[in-house]
Length: 249
Ligand code: PGA
Image (cartoon, rainbow, N blue to C red; front, side):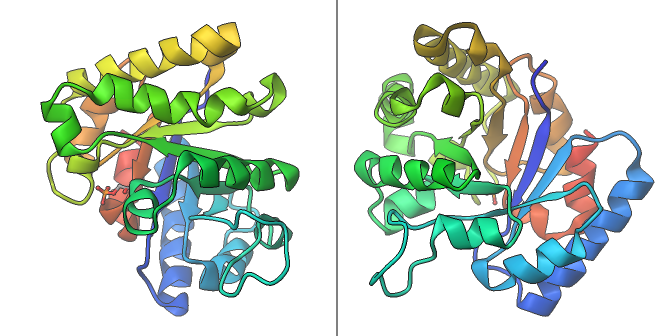
């Protein structure tokens, strides 16, 4: 049985005190909500510590939005996976399309980041997804396959068992435009098939999240699909109420 996961990617939003308030809101809402998906929140680095403290004993896990390619040393401005793990974080988002697009992250960089994450017992949430031109040229399957082959296929079987994948079509991120539930299911099933070709039956235990303008009004339909195991939520994760409405969808 694969885990249902709803993860909030706060991106570069919230000041530290606002982040703590948001985390408190999510924790309070979760206890009231009853049954819901496994929750993860990914605040900016500056408030990872205070959010981990706030969410202690809440059953909500905390993740970072990125980590360095190197273990430590003279890399001004970087944050090592060991530092993130030392704060009590369990997850790290890697390969988000904004990192690929604005900061030039490639499969080569991401292989190093994945290695750092695993060396520090962090579970990567590895993001894949095509842009609008690629979708319109009907190249989305190939793009996603390459993003998986070039990075995920380098993992050991044991590392693969500790991986979450997020499919996020770039044209749907922050645009208000969502993939239809059928489009999501089609590519999620394809991703699982690619994973199965390398990792066999373990692919059936890998949670594949959908991301891209997921909101309370569309989450239930998308999450109902067989190969969609939850969501990676940006904008709607900044309101505890919306985030929880998605998590209970
Ligand atoms: P969005 O972002 O929900 O604001 O579209 C999703 C993401 O980038 O993770």
